[in-house]
Length: 175
Image 1 (cartoon, helix red, strand yellow):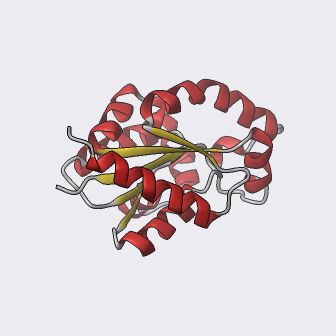
Image 2 (spheres, rainbow, N blue to C red; image 1 turned 90 degrees about the horizontal axis):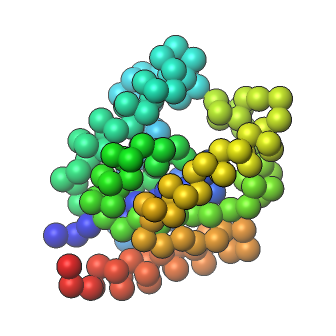
C-alpha cells in the first residue's frame, strides 16, 4: 500500500507550492485540507472563522482527517494550525510520512504580509502574532513530524528533491 506524504508547517512556509511540485513529479494527487474545507463549506476560511469561529474550523479539520484516514498515494498539504489538536497529530502520523516545513518568523512575516486571507494574522502586530503562535506550535510540529526541512535558504526544487529522497528511504523501511 502506498502511503501519503503529508506537509505540515506554519502558514507561509510553502506547503501548497511544495505540494503541487511533489504532485507533478510523483503523479500523486494533492489534497489541500484548507481548500477542501472551503469547497465543502462553500465559503472561505476567513468567513468560517468569522461566522463559526476557530473551534468550529478545527472540528472541520479533524472530521476531514478522519475521512482521509484510508486514503493512500496522496500529497496532503495541511493548514498551519491543524497540529493544535492531539487527535489531529495522531491521525496525521497514521496517514503517512509527515514533513514539517520550517521558516523563520521574519521569513514567514515577509511571505504572508501581502495576504489578507490569513484570519489569525489580522491583528495590529502580525509579526508579534507569528512569534507567539510559533512558540506554542513548534513543539506540536516537532511531535507530529517525521522530518523537518528548513526552507529559508532552499528553493522549491531543492525542498522537493529532499522530500522525495527522504520519503523513498522512509517508505522502504520495514514497519
